[in-house]
Every structure is written in structure tokens, then in C-alpha cells.
Image (cartoon, rainbow, N blue to C red):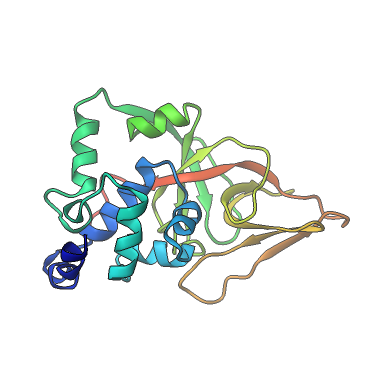
Length: 233
């Protein structure tokens, strides 16, 4: 382990694009963990995990040590390699089985609330996720208020749920009939819909349990996202 970790800083510079971030994300998704849950196991913040997955930063050797300790089946190549990394292996496993699909029902705002509208389209979803969340559906994210975790234009996989857990990302319906996606901050007396963006200017939307303003309706929890096939980098 120590010998492998000594190679980390040298080998990490040889990777292209965002292989490390893609591999880390694939490990997390395969384990069925949210970014917050994954972060707790690695003893880092959710924003740190998000920055790894988007390629904004890379894990340190100490982070890698904890990652390999928490997931004993992983190797350095699983995380470092683009050709033989965990993401590529997961894709090969998925391609060996019948692809699963989930419906794309409309779009949801990551910014100001806006209407969701039906779209008759089906989108491929990893088999492991389809097994875990058979009733999940996709919504297209429009806006930048959640771009730390949900890029503008991505397809968010939503699991129907009616209860809100602090720190998770949900799709909410407002009293006006609009829909918005935000991270939930839950206390005894209020629910706050929090933006999670690299850009300034987005304000939380606060609801008090004792206030006259109705609490937002929970449509479902976001558990995964993918980019449309036409998306190019």
C-alpha cells in the first residue's frame, strides 16, 4: 500500500481529462452512496467529493489511503487509469447485460422554479441503479444554481419520496405549481431550499413550519445524474 501511494503524485499527472474523477464517481455510484455519505466514509466534505468528481481538484495521498481502506477491492489503477479504471470496468459490466431505461418526464429548474413538462423519451440507466430504484425517473436540469453537483443540462435521476432528510438533494413542488431542485436544510421549525453553485447570486428559499406559506411538496430525491448523448466536451 505505502509503495503504491508513493507513486500517486507521479502517476496522477499522467492522466488525461477527468479519469480520476470519473472513477471515483463510478465507485460511489456502484456502492449506492450519495456524495454526502461517500464523503463521511472518506472523512472529507461533500464539496470535496464534488470537486474530485468534476475534476476541479484531485485527492491527496491521504485521501487515497482512506479510499482504498474503505473499499478493499479497489486498486490504484481502478482510480488512476482511464483505460482500466473502475468507470471503464463498470461500463463494460453494464454492456454485458441488457440495458435498463428510465423515463425522462420533463425538466426542472436549478435556479428560479419553473414548470416541469412531460417528454416521451427513455434514457439508459445503470443496471445496479435500476435494481435499487425501479420507480425512478429522469428530469432535465435547467440552470446553474446546483452546478456543484448537477451541471446545467444534465439528466437527474429522481426517486419518488415524500420525506426530506437534511443535506440531500430533492426536487420540490411549490404552491404555484412550479418545480425546482435544491439541497434541503432541515431544522425543527423550517425547511430551506439551498442552492449549491460555484456562481454567486443564488439565494436560499426558506419555509417555516408555522408560517402561512405552505411547505414545498417533495417530488423525489436525486440519486444520480448523466449527460445527454449529444453533450460534448
